[in-house]
Image 1 (cartoon, rainbow, N blue to C red):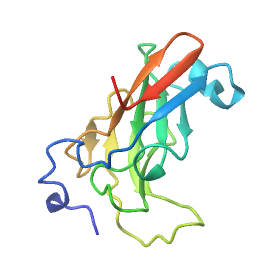
Image 2 (image 1 turned 30 degrees about the vertical axis):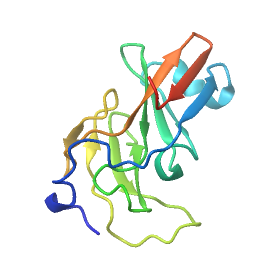
Image 3 (image 1 turned 45 degrees about the vertical axis):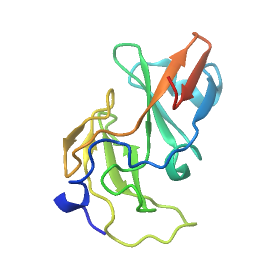
Length: 148
């Protein structure tokens, strides 16, 4: 499978993701989440979301937390395609999953880029934004769910 216009032309939104329950509670003072203390900080929460690829949680410049599924919207069924924060920390990108537990071949990822605060595509073949989850904060905890 490769990223081509035909791979996502029938997709009218992010409803192609498998229906999964997301219910994550994060203590903001936990050392594992220290990067979220600063604006434009981000962390991965593994083993949740669509296909268990995890979610990425981002602290926006507007002091709001957002969370997105790490499944690529262009190739959502491709086991090896996933979304990660670029090394510059300025956008998400869809690239190839590297994990010794999975057999990955070349291709199957699209190299699309997405804005970190809203998940909208800015380059590549993606035509729809990343799957976003609801994030609520009480100042001590972040609650991330797929229900409003």
